[in-house]
Length: 599
Ligand SMILES: Cc1ncc(C[n+]2csc(CCOP(=O)(O)OP(=O)(O)O)c2C)c(N)n1
Ligand SMILES: CC(=O)[C@@H](O)[C@H](O)COP(=O)(O)O
Ligand SMILES: [Mg+2]
Image (cartoon, rainbow, N blue to C red; front, side, top):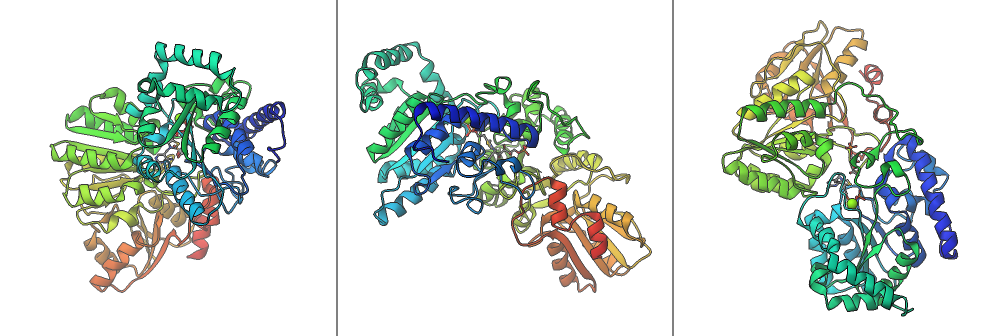
Protein backbone atom coordinates (compact mmCIF):
# COMPACT_ATOMS: atom_id res chain seq x y z
CA UNK A 1 0.00 0.00 0.00
CA UNK A 2 1.48 3.35 -0.95
CA UNK A 3 1.39 5.53 2.10
CA UNK A 4 4.02 7.98 0.99
CA UNK A 5 1.97 9.47 -1.85
CA UNK A 6 -1.14 10.08 0.28
CA UNK A 7 -2.01 13.43 1.79
CA UNK A 8 -2.99 13.97 5.39
CA UNK A 9 -6.73 13.63 4.78
CA UNK A 10 -6.23 10.38 2.92
CA UNK A 11 -3.99 9.05 5.63
CA UNK A 12 -6.54 9.89 8.30
CA UNK A 13 -9.13 8.00 6.29
CA UNK A 14 -6.67 5.11 6.02
CA UNK A 15 -6.35 5.05 9.82
CA UNK A 16 -10.12 4.64 10.08
CA UNK A 17 -10.09 1.76 7.58
CA UNK A 18 -7.23 0.05 9.41
CA UNK A 19 -9.13 0.25 12.70
CA UNK A 20 -12.27 -1.15 11.11
CA UNK A 21 -10.32 -4.04 9.63
CA UNK A 22 -8.60 -4.83 12.94
CA UNK A 23 -11.83 -4.68 14.93
CA UNK A 24 -13.62 -6.90 12.44
CA UNK A 25 -10.93 -9.58 12.14
CA UNK A 26 -9.86 -9.67 15.79
CA UNK A 27 -13.49 -9.90 16.89
CA UNK A 28 -13.61 -13.17 14.94
CA UNK A 29 -10.06 -14.57 15.35
CA UNK A 30 -9.02 -13.10 18.67
CA UNK A 31 -5.62 -11.47 19.09
CA UNK A 32 -3.72 -8.59 20.61
CA UNK A 33 -6.35 -5.93 20.34
CA UNK A 34 -5.96 -2.76 22.37
CA UNK A 35 -2.19 -2.35 21.86
CA UNK A 36 -2.57 -2.59 18.14
CA UNK A 37 -5.55 -0.19 17.97
CA UNK A 38 -3.59 2.37 19.96
CA UNK A 39 -0.66 2.24 17.54
CA UNK A 40 -2.51 2.98 14.28
CA UNK A 41 -1.52 6.63 13.75
CA UNK A 42 2.04 6.02 14.94
CA UNK A 43 2.44 3.19 12.43
CA UNK A 44 0.94 5.10 9.53
CA UNK A 45 3.27 8.02 10.33
CA UNK A 46 6.26 5.65 10.42
CA UNK A 47 5.36 4.47 6.94
CA UNK A 48 4.91 8.05 5.73
CA UNK A 49 8.23 9.35 7.02
CA UNK A 50 10.47 6.29 6.73
CA UNK A 51 10.96 3.81 3.93
CA UNK A 52 9.80 0.33 4.82
CA UNK A 53 11.72 -1.11 1.87
CA UNK A 54 15.05 -0.01 3.30
CA UNK A 55 14.76 1.36 6.85
CA UNK A 56 14.59 -1.36 9.53
CA UNK A 57 11.10 -1.07 11.11
CA UNK A 58 11.48 -2.65 14.53
CA UNK A 59 8.44 -3.36 16.68
CA UNK A 60 9.08 -4.24 20.32
CA UNK A 61 7.20 -7.42 21.35
CA UNK A 62 5.46 -6.76 18.01
CA UNK A 63 2.01 -7.50 19.37
CA UNK A 64 1.10 -3.99 18.12
CA UNK A 65 2.17 -4.74 14.54
CA UNK A 66 -1.26 -5.37 12.97
CA UNK A 67 -1.45 -1.91 11.30
CA UNK A 68 2.04 -2.54 9.89
CA UNK A 69 0.89 -5.88 8.46
CA UNK A 70 -2.10 -4.20 6.87
CA UNK A 71 0.12 -1.57 5.29
CA UNK A 72 2.53 -4.11 3.84
CA UNK A 73 0.53 -6.20 1.39
CA UNK A 74 -1.30 -8.33 3.95
CA UNK A 75 -4.72 -6.65 3.93
CA UNK A 76 -6.60 -9.70 2.63
CA UNK A 77 -4.46 -12.31 4.35
CA UNK A 78 -5.00 -10.48 7.63
CA UNK A 79 -8.20 -12.52 7.75
CA UNK A 80 -6.03 -15.49 8.82
CA UNK A 81 -4.09 -13.81 11.60
CA UNK A 82 -3.00 -16.18 14.41
CA UNK A 83 -4.82 -19.10 12.75
CA UNK A 84 -3.01 -22.32 11.94
CA UNK A 85 -1.32 -21.83 8.56
CA UNK A 86 -2.20 -18.12 8.56
CA UNK A 87 -0.38 -14.92 9.37
CA UNK A 88 1.55 -14.74 12.61
CA UNK A 89 0.36 -12.32 15.29
CA UNK A 90 3.91 -11.01 15.51
CA UNK A 91 6.47 -9.74 13.01
CA UNK A 92 8.08 -12.51 11.06
CA UNK A 93 10.60 -12.01 8.22
CA UNK A 94 9.61 -15.36 6.67
CA UNK A 95 6.14 -13.92 6.23
CA UNK A 96 7.18 -10.56 4.75
CA UNK A 97 10.40 -8.72 3.97
CA UNK A 98 8.76 -5.71 5.66
CA UNK A 99 9.12 -7.53 8.98
CA UNK A 100 12.68 -6.89 10.11
CA UNK A 101 12.88 -9.40 12.95
CA UNK A 102 10.96 -12.10 14.78
CA UNK A 103 9.72 -10.68 18.07
CA UNK A 104 7.40 -11.77 20.86
CA UNK A 105 9.53 -11.27 23.92
CA UNK A 106 9.79 -7.67 25.01
CA UNK A 107 12.51 -5.04 25.10
CA UNK A 108 14.81 -6.33 22.35
CA UNK A 109 14.02 -3.55 19.87
CA UNK A 110 16.59 -0.91 20.78
CA UNK A 111 19.42 -3.46 20.78
CA UNK A 112 18.32 -4.57 17.32
CA UNK A 113 18.30 -0.95 16.21
CA UNK A 114 21.79 -0.37 17.62
CA UNK A 115 23.11 -3.41 15.74
CA UNK A 116 21.41 -2.34 12.54
CA UNK A 117 22.71 1.24 12.93
CA UNK A 118 26.29 -0.02 13.29
CA UNK A 119 25.95 -2.12 10.14
CA UNK A 120 24.47 0.83 8.28
CA UNK A 121 27.36 3.05 9.36
CA UNK A 122 30.00 0.48 8.35
CA UNK A 123 28.33 0.09 4.96
CA UNK A 124 28.05 3.85 4.61
CA UNK A 125 24.32 3.73 3.92
CA UNK A 126 21.64 6.31 4.60
CA UNK A 127 19.07 3.96 6.11
CA UNK A 128 17.65 4.74 9.58
CA UNK A 129 16.39 2.14 12.06
CA UNK A 130 13.05 3.13 13.56
CA UNK A 131 11.73 1.48 16.69
CA UNK A 132 8.30 1.37 18.26
CA UNK A 133 8.41 0.43 21.92
CA UNK A 134 5.72 0.63 24.62
CA UNK A 135 6.04 2.16 28.06
CA UNK A 136 5.66 -1.31 29.63
CA UNK A 137 8.55 -2.65 27.61
CA UNK A 138 10.72 0.21 28.86
CA UNK A 139 10.88 -1.56 32.23
CA UNK A 140 13.25 -4.33 31.16
CA UNK A 141 16.99 -4.04 31.65
CA UNK A 142 17.91 -4.75 28.04
CA UNK A 143 16.47 -1.40 27.04
CA UNK A 144 18.94 0.45 29.24
CA UNK A 145 21.84 -1.69 28.09
CA UNK A 146 21.00 -0.61 24.55
CA UNK A 147 20.40 3.08 25.39
CA UNK A 148 23.67 3.13 27.29
CA UNK A 149 25.56 2.25 24.13
CA UNK A 150 23.37 4.26 21.79
CA UNK A 151 23.86 7.46 23.79
CA UNK A 152 27.58 6.89 23.47
CA UNK A 153 27.92 5.99 19.80
CA UNK A 154 25.17 8.44 18.78
CA UNK A 155 24.21 6.72 15.55
CA UNK A 156 20.91 7.74 13.99
CA UNK A 157 18.10 5.66 15.50
CA UNK A 158 14.56 6.90 16.00
CA UNK A 159 12.73 5.44 18.96
CA UNK A 160 9.00 6.01 19.14
CA UNK A 161 7.99 5.56 22.75
CA UNK A 162 4.33 4.55 22.56
CA UNK A 163 3.20 5.53 26.02
CA UNK A 164 -0.33 4.40 26.83
CA UNK A 165 0.35 4.19 30.56
CA UNK A 166 -0.28 0.47 30.47
CA UNK A 167 1.70 -2.71 30.29
CA UNK A 168 -0.67 -5.71 30.02
CA UNK A 169 -1.78 -4.64 33.47
CA UNK A 170 -1.05 -1.45 35.33
CA UNK A 171 2.56 -0.48 34.61
CA UNK A 172 4.87 -1.01 37.55
CA UNK A 173 7.72 1.02 38.87
CA UNK A 174 9.50 4.30 38.87
CA UNK A 175 10.08 4.56 35.11
CA UNK A 176 6.39 4.57 34.28
CA UNK A 177 5.66 6.94 37.18
CA UNK A 178 8.42 9.17 35.87
CA UNK A 179 7.04 9.20 32.34
CA UNK A 180 3.53 10.12 33.39
CA UNK A 181 3.69 11.92 36.73
CA UNK A 182 5.86 14.81 35.65
CA UNK A 183 3.64 15.45 32.68
CA UNK A 184 0.69 15.79 34.92
CA UNK A 185 2.30 18.70 36.77
CA UNK A 186 0.19 21.83 36.32
CA UNK A 187 3.15 24.11 35.78
CA UNK A 188 4.49 21.90 33.02
CA UNK A 189 1.11 21.64 31.29
CA UNK A 190 0.72 25.40 31.33
CA UNK A 191 4.16 25.94 29.95
CA UNK A 192 3.63 23.43 27.17
CA UNK A 193 0.35 25.07 26.25
CA UNK A 194 2.13 28.39 26.01
CA UNK A 195 4.94 26.94 23.92
CA UNK A 196 2.47 25.15 21.65
CA UNK A 197 0.30 28.18 21.07
CA UNK A 198 2.69 31.04 20.91
CA UNK A 199 5.72 29.46 19.35
CA UNK A 200 4.90 26.35 17.39
CA UNK A 201 2.17 28.07 15.42
CA UNK A 202 4.46 30.88 14.42
CA UNK A 203 7.45 28.78 13.47
CA UNK A 204 6.68 26.57 10.51
CA UNK A 205 9.86 24.56 10.15
CA UNK A 206 11.30 22.43 12.91
CA UNK A 207 8.84 23.98 15.30
CA UNK A 208 8.51 21.05 17.62
CA UNK A 209 12.22 20.73 17.83
CA UNK A 210 12.64 24.39 18.63
CA UNK A 211 9.93 24.08 21.22
CA UNK A 212 11.83 21.21 22.66
CA UNK A 213 14.97 23.27 22.82
CA UNK A 214 13.08 25.91 24.75
CA UNK A 215 11.92 23.16 27.02
CA UNK A 216 15.53 22.42 27.79
CA UNK A 217 15.53 25.50 29.94
CA UNK A 218 12.91 23.76 32.06
CA UNK A 219 14.60 20.40 31.62
CA UNK A 220 14.22 19.38 35.19
CA UNK A 221 10.52 19.04 34.85
CA UNK A 222 10.29 17.22 31.53
CA UNK A 223 10.39 13.46 31.13
CA UNK A 224 13.18 13.85 28.62
CA UNK A 225 15.83 14.44 31.23
CA UNK A 226 16.65 10.82 31.81
CA UNK A 227 17.19 10.19 28.09
CA UNK A 228 19.00 13.45 27.44
CA UNK A 229 21.37 12.66 30.25
CA UNK A 230 22.07 9.36 28.54
CA UNK A 231 23.00 11.25 25.38
CA UNK A 232 19.79 10.70 23.45
CA UNK A 233 17.68 13.58 22.16
CA UNK A 234 14.12 13.66 23.38
CA UNK A 235 11.09 15.19 21.69
CA UNK A 236 7.69 15.14 23.27
CA UNK A 237 5.34 14.37 24.62
CA UNK A 238 3.24 14.52 21.48
CA UNK A 239 -0.30 13.35 20.85
CA UNK A 240 0.10 9.85 19.43
CA UNK A 241 -3.26 10.05 17.69
CA UNK A 242 -2.64 13.36 15.94
CA UNK A 243 -1.28 12.20 12.61
CA UNK A 244 -0.04 15.60 11.50
CA UNK A 245 1.86 16.17 14.72
CA UNK A 246 3.41 12.71 14.60
CA UNK A 247 4.49 13.02 10.96
CA UNK A 248 6.03 16.45 11.57
CA UNK A 249 7.85 15.25 14.65
CA UNK A 250 9.19 12.09 13.05
CA UNK A 251 10.45 14.08 10.10
CA UNK A 252 12.29 16.45 12.43
CA UNK A 253 13.69 13.54 14.41
CA UNK A 254 14.86 11.82 11.23
CA UNK A 255 16.56 14.99 9.98
CA UNK A 256 18.56 15.29 13.18
CA UNK A 257 20.60 12.21 12.16
CA UNK A 258 21.11 11.32 15.80
CA UNK A 259 19.50 8.96 18.28
CA UNK A 260 16.15 10.52 19.18
CA UNK A 261 13.29 9.41 21.39
CA UNK A 262 9.89 10.63 20.29
CA UNK A 263 7.57 10.31 23.24
CA UNK A 264 3.96 9.83 22.07
CA UNK A 265 1.00 9.60 24.39
CA UNK A 266 -1.59 7.12 23.14
CA UNK A 267 -4.74 5.45 24.37
CA UNK A 268 -4.80 1.68 24.45
CA UNK A 269 -7.83 0.45 22.49
CA UNK A 270 -8.27 3.80 20.69
CA UNK A 271 -11.23 3.71 18.34
CA UNK A 272 -13.19 0.95 20.06
CA UNK A 273 -14.82 2.77 22.95
CA UNK A 274 -15.47 -0.32 25.07
CA UNK A 275 -11.77 -1.16 25.13
CA UNK A 276 -10.35 2.33 25.43
CA UNK A 277 -8.10 3.27 28.30
CA UNK A 278 -6.53 1.28 31.07
CA UNK A 279 -8.55 -1.80 30.49
CA UNK A 280 -6.43 -4.91 30.91
CA UNK A 281 -8.96 -7.41 29.62
CA UNK A 282 -8.71 -6.00 26.08
CA UNK A 283 -4.95 -6.55 25.74
CA UNK A 284 -5.25 -10.05 24.30
CA UNK A 285 -8.74 -11.27 23.48
CA UNK A 286 -10.71 -14.18 22.15
CA UNK A 287 -13.56 -13.65 19.68
CA UNK A 288 -16.13 -11.08 20.80
CA UNK A 289 -19.34 -9.39 19.72
CA UNK A 290 -18.37 -6.01 18.24
CA UNK A 291 -21.64 -4.35 19.24
CA UNK A 292 -21.73 -5.38 22.89
CA UNK A 293 -18.08 -6.17 23.58
CA UNK A 294 -19.14 -9.50 25.03
CA UNK A 295 -16.65 -12.36 24.70
CA UNK A 296 -17.98 -15.38 22.84
CA UNK A 297 -16.08 -18.14 24.59
CA UNK A 298 -17.97 -19.32 27.64
CA UNK A 299 -15.96 -20.18 30.74
CA UNK A 300 -14.80 -23.79 30.49
CA UNK A 301 -13.06 -26.05 32.99
CA UNK A 302 -10.94 -24.30 35.60
CA UNK A 303 -7.52 -23.45 34.20
CA UNK A 304 -4.34 -24.89 35.70
CA UNK A 305 -3.37 -21.25 36.40
CA UNK A 306 -6.48 -20.78 38.56
CA UNK A 307 -5.87 -24.07 40.37
CA UNK A 308 -2.28 -22.99 41.01
CA UNK A 309 -3.53 -19.68 42.45
CA UNK A 310 -5.93 -21.60 44.73
CA UNK A 311 -3.10 -23.82 45.94
CA UNK A 312 -0.64 -20.98 46.45
CA UNK A 313 -3.26 -18.91 48.21
CA UNK A 314 -3.94 -21.73 50.67
CA UNK A 315 -0.20 -22.16 51.23
CA UNK A 316 0.38 -18.42 51.74
CA UNK A 317 -2.51 -18.27 54.22
CA UNK A 318 -0.92 -21.05 56.21
CA UNK A 319 2.74 -19.94 56.07
CA UNK A 320 3.88 -16.35 56.59
CA UNK A 321 7.20 -16.97 54.87
CA UNK A 322 5.63 -17.66 51.48
CA UNK A 323 6.32 -14.77 49.08
CA UNK A 324 6.21 -14.45 45.31
CA UNK A 325 6.48 -12.46 42.12
CA UNK A 326 5.13 -12.24 38.63
CA UNK A 327 7.01 -10.41 35.87
CA UNK A 328 4.25 -8.23 34.39
CA UNK A 329 1.78 -11.08 33.99
CA UNK A 330 -0.42 -10.73 37.11
CA UNK A 331 -3.66 -12.03 35.64
CA UNK A 332 -1.97 -14.45 33.25
CA UNK A 333 -0.24 -16.22 36.13
CA UNK A 334 -2.98 -15.85 38.76
CA UNK A 335 -0.63 -13.83 40.97
CA UNK A 336 -3.06 -10.89 40.85
CA UNK A 337 -5.15 -12.81 43.37
CA UNK A 338 -2.18 -13.29 45.71
CA UNK A 339 -1.24 -9.61 45.35
CA UNK A 340 -4.72 -8.70 46.59
CA UNK A 341 -4.71 -11.21 49.43
CA UNK A 342 -1.15 -10.53 50.59
CA UNK A 343 -0.04 -7.15 49.21
CA UNK A 344 3.10 -7.19 51.36
CA UNK A 345 4.27 -10.58 50.16
CA UNK A 346 3.40 -10.77 46.46
CA UNK A 347 4.58 -8.35 43.80
CA UNK A 348 4.40 -7.58 40.13
CA UNK A 349 7.95 -6.48 39.41
CA UNK A 350 7.32 -5.44 35.74
CA UNK A 351 8.90 -7.02 32.67
CA UNK A 352 12.06 -8.00 34.51
CA UNK A 353 12.42 -11.78 34.66
CA UNK A 354 16.11 -11.62 35.53
CA UNK A 355 15.47 -9.24 38.40
CA UNK A 356 12.54 -11.42 39.52
CA UNK A 357 14.82 -14.41 39.94
CA UNK A 358 17.77 -12.67 41.58
CA UNK A 359 15.67 -10.60 43.98
CA UNK A 360 13.76 -13.68 45.06
CA UNK A 361 17.04 -15.55 45.52
CA UNK A 362 17.95 -12.95 48.14
CA UNK A 363 14.57 -13.38 49.81
CA UNK A 364 15.24 -17.10 50.02
CA UNK A 365 18.61 -16.35 51.59
CA UNK A 366 16.77 -14.20 54.13
CA UNK A 367 14.65 -17.18 55.11
CA UNK A 368 11.56 -16.69 52.94
CA UNK A 369 10.05 -19.24 50.56
CA UNK A 370 9.73 -17.52 47.17
CA UNK A 371 7.35 -18.65 44.41
CA UNK A 372 8.52 -17.21 41.10
CA UNK A 373 5.62 -17.60 38.71
CA UNK A 374 6.63 -17.05 35.11
CA UNK A 375 5.61 -18.51 31.77
CA UNK A 376 7.99 -21.18 30.44
CA UNK A 377 8.94 -19.01 27.47
CA UNK A 378 9.72 -15.86 29.49
CA UNK A 379 11.74 -17.72 32.12
CA UNK A 380 14.27 -18.39 29.34
CA UNK A 381 15.40 -14.81 29.81
CA UNK A 382 16.52 -15.49 33.38
CA UNK A 383 18.61 -18.54 32.58
CA UNK A 384 21.86 -17.21 34.02
CA UNK A 385 20.16 -15.89 37.15
CA UNK A 386 18.68 -19.35 37.76
CA UNK A 387 22.16 -20.86 37.59
CA UNK A 388 24.23 -18.12 39.19
CA UNK A 389 21.94 -16.76 41.86
CA UNK A 390 19.71 -19.71 42.72
CA UNK A 391 21.27 -23.06 41.84
CA UNK A 392 24.88 -22.43 42.84
CA UNK A 393 23.57 -21.06 46.14
CA UNK A 394 21.23 -24.07 46.39
CA UNK A 395 18.40 -21.79 47.53
CA UNK A 396 14.89 -23.12 48.13
CA UNK A 397 13.21 -21.08 45.41
CA UNK A 398 10.17 -22.50 43.65
CA UNK A 399 9.78 -21.84 39.92
CA UNK A 400 6.13 -22.20 39.01
CA UNK A 401 6.27 -22.52 35.26
CA UNK A 402 2.99 -21.64 33.59
CA UNK A 403 2.19 -22.12 29.86
CA UNK A 404 4.36 -25.25 29.62
CA UNK A 405 3.84 -27.01 26.30
CA UNK A 406 2.06 -25.65 23.26
CA UNK A 407 0.42 -22.29 23.92
CA UNK A 408 -1.55 -22.03 20.69
CA UNK A 409 -2.05 -18.86 18.69
CA UNK A 410 1.01 -16.91 19.89
CA UNK A 411 3.25 -19.52 18.28
CA UNK A 412 6.97 -20.04 18.08
CA UNK A 413 8.14 -17.16 20.28
CA UNK A 414 5.83 -18.25 23.09
CA UNK A 415 5.79 -22.07 23.07
CA UNK A 416 6.69 -23.56 26.43
CA UNK A 417 8.91 -26.23 24.94
CA UNK A 418 12.33 -25.80 26.45
CA UNK A 419 12.08 -25.50 30.24
CA UNK A 420 12.83 -29.15 31.01
CA UNK A 421 15.85 -29.12 28.72
CA UNK A 422 17.28 -25.89 30.13
CA UNK A 423 16.68 -26.75 33.78
CA UNK A 424 17.35 -30.46 33.95
CA UNK A 425 21.13 -30.27 33.73
CA UNK A 426 21.46 -27.73 36.54
CA UNK A 427 22.96 -29.13 39.74
CA UNK A 428 20.67 -28.78 42.78
CA UNK A 429 17.54 -28.37 40.65
CA UNK A 430 14.54 -30.63 41.30
CA UNK A 431 11.96 -30.97 38.52
CA UNK A 432 8.47 -32.34 38.92
CA UNK A 433 5.06 -31.88 37.35
CA UNK A 434 1.42 -32.42 38.28
CA UNK A 435 -0.88 -34.27 35.87
CA UNK A 436 -4.24 -32.86 37.07
CA UNK A 437 -5.83 -30.42 39.51
CA UNK A 438 -5.49 -32.62 42.58
CA UNK A 439 -1.83 -33.34 41.94
CA UNK A 440 -1.17 -29.62 41.27
CA UNK A 441 -2.37 -28.87 44.81
CA UNK A 442 -0.18 -31.68 46.12
CA UNK A 443 2.81 -30.48 44.10
CA UNK A 444 2.55 -27.00 45.61
CA UNK A 445 2.28 -28.40 49.13
CA UNK A 446 5.28 -30.62 48.46
CA UNK A 447 7.35 -27.76 47.02
CA UNK A 448 7.08 -25.95 50.35
CA UNK A 449 8.93 -28.80 52.08
CA UNK A 450 11.97 -28.72 49.79
CA UNK A 451 15.21 -27.08 50.83
CA UNK A 452 16.56 -26.80 47.28
CA UNK A 453 15.49 -25.05 44.07
CA UNK A 454 12.67 -26.77 42.25
CA UNK A 455 10.52 -26.19 39.18
CA UNK A 456 6.94 -27.27 38.61
CA UNK A 457 5.39 -27.00 35.15
CA UNK A 458 1.75 -26.88 34.10
CA UNK A 459 -0.03 -26.08 30.85
CA UNK A 460 -2.03 -23.20 29.40
CA UNK A 461 -5.73 -23.93 29.90
CA UNK A 462 -7.20 -26.78 31.91
CA UNK A 463 -5.83 -30.19 32.81
CA UNK A 464 -7.86 -33.14 31.60
CA UNK A 465 -9.21 -35.06 34.57
CA UNK A 466 -8.16 -38.69 34.31
CA UNK A 467 -10.00 -40.59 37.02
CA UNK A 468 -6.88 -41.77 38.84
CA UNK A 469 -6.54 -40.76 42.49
CA UNK A 470 -3.32 -38.85 43.06
CA UNK A 471 -1.05 -39.86 45.93
CA UNK A 472 0.93 -37.16 47.78
CA UNK A 473 4.31 -36.28 46.28
CA UNK A 474 7.48 -37.84 47.66
CA UNK A 475 10.90 -36.79 46.40
CA UNK A 476 11.85 -38.78 43.30
CA UNK A 477 8.82 -41.07 43.45
CA UNK A 478 6.63 -41.80 40.44
CA UNK A 479 3.07 -43.14 40.56
CA UNK A 480 2.15 -46.27 38.66
CA UNK A 481 -1.40 -45.64 37.46
CA UNK A 482 -2.04 -49.07 35.97
CA UNK A 483 -0.30 -52.31 35.13
CA UNK A 484 -0.82 -53.84 31.66
CA UNK A 485 -0.87 -57.26 30.08
CA UNK A 486 1.18 -56.25 27.01
CA UNK A 487 4.94 -55.66 26.85
CA UNK A 488 4.37 -51.90 26.50
CA UNK A 489 4.75 -49.15 29.10
CA UNK A 490 3.46 -45.60 28.65
CA UNK A 491 5.40 -43.05 30.69
CA UNK A 492 3.76 -39.63 31.05
CA UNK A 493 5.10 -36.43 32.56
CA UNK A 494 2.81 -33.56 33.56
CA UNK A 495 0.05 -32.97 31.03
CA UNK A 496 1.68 -35.75 29.00
CA UNK A 497 0.05 -38.24 31.38
CA UNK A 498 -3.39 -37.45 29.98
CA UNK A 499 -2.10 -37.96 26.45
CA UNK A 500 -0.73 -41.33 27.56
CA UNK A 501 -4.09 -42.25 29.09
CA UNK A 502 -6.07 -41.20 26.00
CA UNK A 503 -3.73 -43.15 23.76
CA UNK A 504 -3.97 -46.21 25.96
CA UNK A 505 -7.77 -46.08 25.80
CA UNK A 506 -7.70 -46.05 22.00
CA UNK A 507 -5.09 -48.79 21.74
CA UNK A 508 -6.31 -52.36 21.48
CA UNK A 509 -3.76 -53.66 23.96
CA UNK A 510 -3.86 -53.38 27.74
CA UNK A 511 -0.92 -51.06 28.47
CA UNK A 512 0.73 -50.08 31.76
CA UNK A 513 0.83 -46.35 32.53
CA UNK A 514 3.37 -44.63 34.74
CA UNK A 515 3.08 -41.02 35.87
CA UNK A 516 6.78 -40.19 36.13
CA UNK A 517 6.16 -37.11 38.32
CA UNK A 518 9.89 -36.35 38.74
CA UNK A 519 12.15 -35.89 35.77
CA UNK A 520 14.86 -35.03 38.27
CA UNK A 521 15.57 -37.01 40.36
CA UNK A 522 14.17 -39.92 38.39
CA UNK A 523 12.49 -42.84 40.10
CA UNK A 524 15.22 -45.32 39.16
CA UNK A 525 13.86 -48.03 41.39
CA UNK A 526 10.48 -47.98 39.70
CA UNK A 527 12.00 -47.79 36.22
CA UNK A 528 14.26 -50.75 36.91
CA UNK A 529 11.35 -52.79 38.26
CA UNK A 530 9.18 -51.95 35.24
CA UNK A 531 11.98 -52.87 32.83
CA UNK A 532 11.69 -56.47 33.92
CA UNK A 533 7.98 -56.53 32.92
CA UNK A 534 7.75 -54.20 29.95
CA UNK A 535 10.41 -53.74 27.29
CA UNK A 536 8.78 -51.19 24.94
CA UNK A 537 8.55 -47.79 26.57
CA UNK A 538 6.77 -44.75 25.13
CA UNK A 539 7.32 -41.31 26.65
CA UNK A 540 4.61 -38.63 26.57
CA UNK A 541 5.54 -35.11 27.55
CA UNK A 542 4.79 -31.63 26.19
CA UNK A 543 8.45 -30.72 25.90
CA UNK A 544 11.40 -30.63 23.58
CA UNK A 545 12.81 -34.06 22.79
CA UNK A 546 16.44 -32.87 23.00
CA UNK A 547 17.31 -32.83 26.69
CA UNK A 548 13.74 -33.66 27.62
CA UNK A 549 12.02 -36.43 29.52
CA UNK A 550 12.84 -39.44 27.34
CA UNK A 551 16.39 -38.18 27.20
CA UNK A 552 16.57 -38.30 31.02
CA UNK A 553 15.12 -41.82 31.01
CA UNK A 554 17.60 -42.91 28.36
CA UNK A 555 20.48 -41.67 30.47
CA UNK A 556 19.22 -43.74 33.40
CA UNK A 557 18.49 -46.81 31.27
CA UNK A 558 21.99 -46.66 29.87
CA UNK A 559 23.63 -46.29 33.27
CA UNK A 560 21.50 -49.02 34.84
CA UNK A 561 22.06 -51.23 31.77
CA UNK A 562 18.36 -51.91 31.34
CA UNK A 563 17.26 -53.66 28.21
CA UNK A 564 14.35 -51.61 26.92
CA UNK A 565 13.40 -49.83 23.75
CA UNK A 566 12.38 -46.18 24.19
CA UNK A 567 10.28 -44.00 21.89
CA UNK A 568 9.80 -40.32 22.69
CA UNK A 569 6.61 -38.50 21.76
CA UNK A 570 8.09 -35.12 22.61
CA UNK A 571 8.68 -32.19 20.24
CA UNK A 572 11.12 -32.64 17.38
CA UNK A 573 14.07 -30.36 16.68
CA UNK A 574 12.27 -27.37 15.18
CA UNK A 575 10.30 -24.34 16.34
CA UNK A 576 6.59 -24.94 16.63
CA UNK A 577 4.20 -22.80 14.61
CA UNK A 578 1.14 -20.90 15.80
CA UNK A 579 -2.50 -21.88 15.61
CA UNK A 580 -5.21 -23.47 17.68
CA UNK A 581 -3.47 -25.93 20.00
CA UNK A 582 -5.41 -28.98 18.76
CA UNK A 583 -4.46 -28.19 15.14
CA UNK A 584 -0.83 -27.61 16.03
CA UNK A 585 -0.72 -30.92 17.92
CA UNK A 586 -2.27 -32.68 14.96
CA UNK A 587 0.39 -31.18 12.69
CA UNK A 588 3.00 -32.61 15.05
CA UNK A 589 1.25 -36.01 14.91
CA UNK A 590 0.64 -35.92 18.63
CA UNK A 591 -3.09 -36.64 18.85
CA UNK A 592 -4.01 -39.86 20.62
CA UNK A 593 -5.30 -41.33 17.37
CA UNK A 594 -2.08 -40.53 15.52
CA UNK A 595 0.00 -41.91 18.36
CA UNK A 596 -1.91 -45.21 18.36
CA UNK A 597 -1.12 -45.54 14.68
CA UNK A 598 2.55 -44.81 15.25
CA UNK A 599 2.76 -47.34 18.08
C1 LIG B 1 10.21 -10.93 28.24
C2 LIG B 1 8.73 -10.77 28.20
N1 LIG B 1 8.02 -10.79 29.34
C3 LIG B 1 6.69 -10.66 29.31
C4 LIG B 1 6.02 -10.49 28.14
C5 LIG B 1 4.52 -10.41 28.11
N2 LIG B 1 4.07 -9.13 27.58
C6 LIG B 1 3.70 -8.96 26.32
S1 LIG B 1 3.18 -7.42 25.95
C7 LIG B 1 3.44 -6.95 27.53
C8 LIG B 1 3.12 -5.54 27.94
C9 LIG B 1 3.88 -4.57 27.13
O1 LIG B 1 3.49 -3.29 27.46
P1 LIG B 1 3.83 -2.11 26.49
O2 LIG B 1 5.20 -2.28 25.95
O3 LIG B 1 3.53 -0.86 27.18
O4 LIG B 1 2.84 -2.36 25.27
P2 LIG B 1 1.27 -2.08 25.18
O5 LIG B 1 0.64 -3.43 25.19
O6 LIG B 1 0.87 -1.22 26.31
O7 LIG B 1 1.09 -1.42 23.87
C10 LIG B 1 3.91 -7.99 28.31
C11 LIG B 1 4.20 -7.92 29.75
C12 LIG B 1 6.79 -10.50 26.96
N3 LIG B 1 6.24 -10.42 25.76
N4 LIG B 1 8.13 -10.63 27.03
C1 LIG C 1 2.32 -10.52 23.70
C2 LIG C 1 2.48 -11.35 24.89
O1 LIG C 1 3.56 -11.81 25.16
C3 LIG C 1 1.36 -11.65 25.78
O2 LIG C 1 0.30 -10.79 25.56
C4 LIG C 1 0.95 -13.09 25.58
O3 LIG C 1 0.38 -13.24 24.31
C5 LIG C 1 -0.02 -13.52 26.64
O4 LIG C 1 -0.27 -14.87 26.54
P1 LIG C 1 -1.50 -15.53 27.31
O5 LIG C 1 -2.72 -15.21 26.50
O6 LIG C 1 -1.19 -16.99 27.33
O7 LIG C 1 -1.54 -14.91 28.68
MG1 LIG D 1 1.95 0.38 27.18
